[in-house]
Length: 297
Image 1 (cartoon, rainbow, N blue to C red):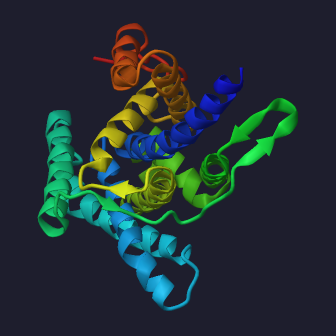
Image 2 (image 1 turned 180 degrees about the vertical axis):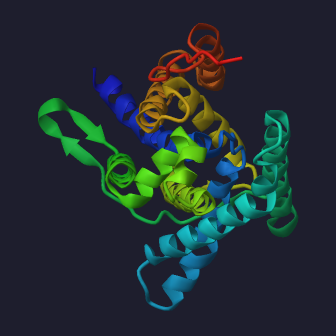
């Protein structure tokens, strides 16, 4: 029972990271029906920004958490640039053209990082360190960093829900997602709304990079590739394009992956995750919260 609780905390930690990344996927897909496969690489960009700015903050005598602000700014710049340069020209193109563009952008960012930074893994200092929490009555010894990571993830998800559900920007996003042509007639600037969506999604990627490197303090140019794929599985599982679906999907995938590694074998974790993707696509392609909608012909 004690092992299960500890693994549950670990699963929620990685699951909250998957959920934040999946939110980036699902927001972009909900607006422009594009799978942004480069989103995982935005996390890598955020991680390296933290790596290079934390020593600067330390030398200036400033708190290390200020580095997160720089990571958010850099990720937003990269995300908006990708949207304007690569995705905007193919919005009205075929689905396969947009998909190929997204994959190409991901490969470009990875190889550019490889060329500039190199392939060697780079250790990174944890931004925050929380002592382990002991509960003697239950004989539990929980990782404090994991609990803080979960709290950050859940807090960001709650704030995002409020933004999308209660603010003017969020209402514009939902309107464009539902019917972009009707949104134009209602006076909504679709291009600006799409850009704001990328700003919000890229900011989430920066926060996810903080959570990731604090749990796994090592960076490589390809760290976003597998992380992005698992987050994509999370988005599909919950129902891509549905915000609460991405949240639930991320937590489920994190839980399943952790339990598989703990109770079966660490080598089967990835296989089980991608096996879930196959099962979902075969049984319910629209995901847990998605609805199968017939297309008029």
